[in-house]
Length: 144
Length: 141
Image 1 (cartoon, each protein chain N blue to C red):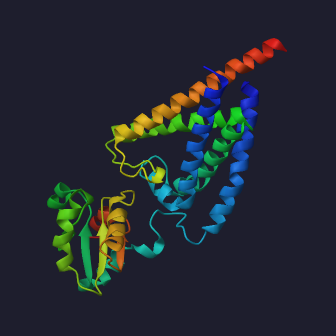
Image 2 (cartoon, rainbow over the protein chains, first blue to last red):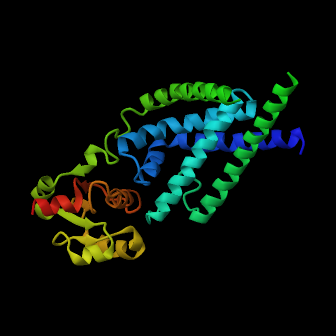
Image 3 (tube, rainbow over the protein chains, first blue to last red):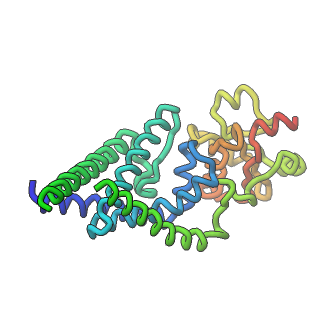
C-alpha cells in the first residue's frame, strides 16, 4: 500500500483525536464525571485527568497530522487507547453502566458494542501506523 | 526508534500540561476539586434532619434496596425507572421544600445523578445530596 494511503490514515486518525479532545475541552467537568463513573480513581485524580487528557489527545493528534514528534504522538495515543479499552472491559465486567465520554455527549448513547468496535478500529489503525513507522525506521537505518 | 519515541512522548506529555494548567486555572472556581459533588449541594444527616417536614427524602437506590429499608417517608426515584417514578414523585413535592437525595455511600453516583436530573429536567431547586449516603443515615439513626 502506498505512502498516500498511510498519510491519509494518519491524518484521519490524528483528526479523530483532535476532534475528540476538543469536545472534552469544552466540558471538562462532564468528562471528569465520565472518568469517575469507571470507579477506578478517586475524584481528585479523575477531575485533574479530565483537564489534562484532552490536551494530550489534541497535541498527539496534531503531532500525527503534522508529522512533528510523530512517533511520540503515535506511542502515547496507542497506549491511551489500550488503557481505555482495558478500563471499559473491566467496568463492563463489574456491571457498571458507563458512557465513556470519548466524544463528549455525541457518544453518550452509544452501546458497549459500538464503543468497543470503534475503539478497536482506532487501535488497529494506530498499531498499523506504528508498525509502518518501525519498518521505515529500520530501512532508513539500513541505508545509512 | 525506541528512544526517539520515548523522547518525543516526554516532550508531548510536558507540553500538554501547559494548556491543561491554564484551563484548570480558568475553571478553578467553577469546579469541585475534592468531591464530585460541590460542597454547596451536600448536606449532612444532622442538617437534613433539622429541616424536619420541610425536607423531602428521595432514595436513588435500586427498587429491591428501597423495599428492604429506607428513610421513613422517602420516595423511590432511581434512574432505572425514572420515567415511571418521576410523575409519581412530583405531586408530592411543594415549592419551598428541600429535597435530600441519597444512595448507598459517598462513592455511589446515583444520588448525584438523580439530583442533577431533578434540577435539570424537573427544574426543581434546593436539591441536595446526603453526605455519606444511606450508611451515614443508619449510623446516626
